[in-house]
Figure 1 (tube, rainbow, N blue to C red):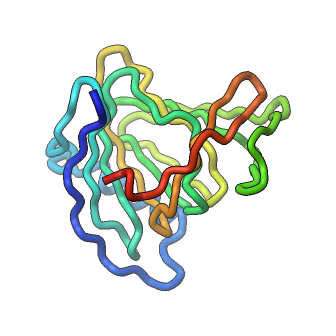
Figure 2: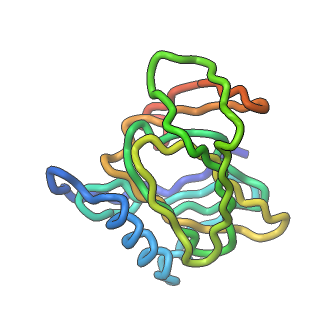
Length: 180
């Protein structure tokens, strides 16, 4: 079954410099604590669901429902900085402690020691810079997770990657029009 989404609410205009990762992190934590908003997200047993929200300074914000066993796969945020916080359940983030070039490559071999993993449960979050690459997963076998994600500037694209051992490959570049 394909992902299900709820129509977007309009965004507000932002300041020229936009919010930093720490401001985005504070916002997603506050939003994740809004139990009525979190409960309003329709959950699907098979596909992720999402609702677009207004964010600080013109940022792009998403409330996302994660059925058990679902994840994003490896991706970046097209040069946007961001933050996310878990509102309900638990998410596992796999990330890389390296700055990958954004252009001019199709396949890279990663060095040993670049892998990072963290688990974020209710209310915990993290901010990140414009070169962050990660894979986020609801590893639970039986519990939905819900999280809040914010990006500034609004996502211009998402690069999707595959990984086999140390080999990292650029697979596709998604444009915003495919996210609904």
